[in-house]
Amino acid sequence: MKDANLATLEVVKYVVKRFGLHMNKRLGQNFLIRPDVVAQIADTADLKPGDPVLEIGPGIGTLTQALAETGAAVTAVEIDSHLLPVLDKTLEHYDNVRIIHGDILKTDIAELMGHKPFKVCANLPYYITTPIIMTLLEERLPMERLVVMVQKEVAERMTASPGSRIYGALSVAVQYYTQPEIIFEIPPKAFMPAPEVTSAVVCLDVRKEPPVSVMEEKRFFQVVKAAFSQRRKTFANTLKAAGVSKDGVAAILADCGIEGSRRGETFSLDEFAAIADAWTRYNKKQ
Ligand SMILES: C[S@@+](CC[C@H](N)C(=O)[O-])C[C@H]1O[C@@H](n2cnc3c(N)ncnc32)[C@H](O)[C@@H]1O
Image (cartoon, rainbow, N blue to C red):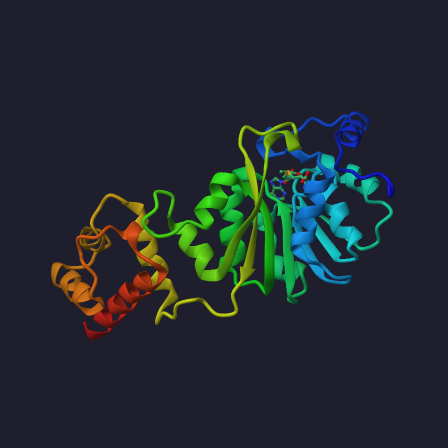
């Protein structure tokens, strides 16, 4: 199938029929049927021959083919064993593709990618988008860029600004580790079967250093989690709920100069960092 572009309705239909596939909704199986969209996703990854790239969920190999065509060294992790014989066939002419059968959330990715720098390019299964993104980022893998297709609403959360309704823990984490940019949107009809939602491709360029420095990163993310777990609470009450004494709350707020009446969802990364450091200093004094 080297000459056939896999990302067309005719080819996807043919493959589904030939292998007797049943799209598994539970595994987020919506396959792209637009060659231009697939090409644009692969272009955004900006791959050179030999570049290691990780794909999550190759499906029948549509995006995998576009990645392989760049000459990159493609590693694709697919959970569904029914798709393995399909991928064997659709990608049989590429010697720069390695298919791994497994659950990406249970895979030792650093080991799989040989502890060397790599990029990620994937049309993600939507039911586990956030766990996948958070795992990849929190493990501090040597990634340079992630190009991921996600639900449009999730893409907007990743890039949201403080104070907006959709700004949350995912926005802070993504913006702490990366510089996110929404590249383009994709309508449901670009997939078979068509999902119920519009999708978007996001490019996350991994930062060499976080944009704010904090004394204890763990504390920073503890503050973020507390701030968004009860969005309607004032920040002073959020700190109390997190187990800080009344005196402690007063001392932390005075130290970082932030009004306790504000809600956590209005804080910028700088403000989250200032609170986390004030909390760390307070704890050290106790
Ligand atoms: C949205 S489809 C993308 C298919 C193909 N890349 C495309 O663009 O047409 C998501 C793929 O992820 C696979 N998948 C779902 N959960 C997974 C997991 N935990 N680990 C690895 N692959 C998974 C599904 O079986 C499916 O092939």
